Amino acid sequence: MMQEIAVSNKNDENGNPAGGSVEGTGIKINWQDGPLGRDADRKEPNGAFVEGVIQAVIQRLRFFQASNFVCRENAIALTKCEEALMWLNSRTANREKRGVEGTHTV
Image (cartoon, rainbow, N blue to C red; front, top):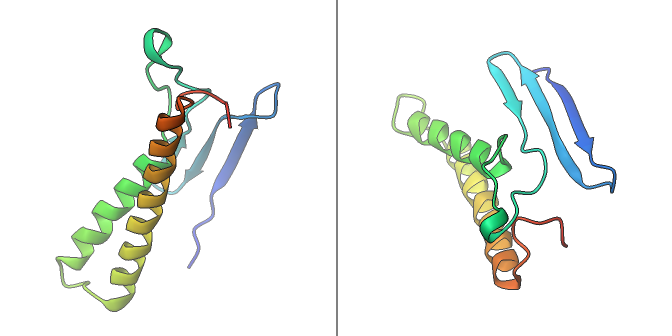
C-alpha cells in the first residue's frame, strides 16, 4: 500500500534544485536548500540530503531483517537501497575529485 505524501520541490532562479519538503504520516523532510559551498565558504546544512534518508531506510530494513519480519523481499529492498547509496556516494566522490562538490556546477 502506497502512503499518500505531500511533495514540494523548489528551484532557484537558475533552475537548480533549491529545497522543498515531503510530508506524510510519520514523515516530515525538509530538503537541503542550496549548495553548501567549498572551503572557507562552506555552510552548515539546512535540510536533509537524499543520502541521509536512504541511510535511515537501510537502518530500518536491517532492523526488520534481524526480527521476525526477515524475508526475501526485505533483503532485496535492502540491497537496492544499499546500491542506491553506493551510487550517490560515488557521484559525490567524483564531484569532489573534480572540485565541484558543494556547488551547482555540473
